[in-house]
Image (cartoon, rainbow, N blue to C red; front, side):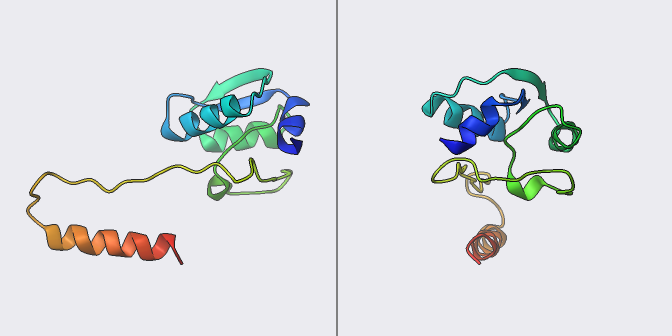
Length: 113
């Protein structure tokens, strides 16, 4: 695959594999049998972006986390692209189900617009 080949050419700057995003990335790499040269693991998406922009490696990050694309080559990862499930949770028998319902409707509208 083209994206794995590109990642294999450079040291891999990994997002913390214990976070939600990190686990999605890790699972996607495992599913595709990727064997990358890990250079570092960081907790900050901003720090990862800076490391990559300075030429210290390549990374997989959520596209919406990219604040500044200067000096970055951005390519999709995976076909289809990796995703994660987001859930809205509240206390059982919450005191304001009307507000929770409104929030759920608003989030759904934003995500599907």
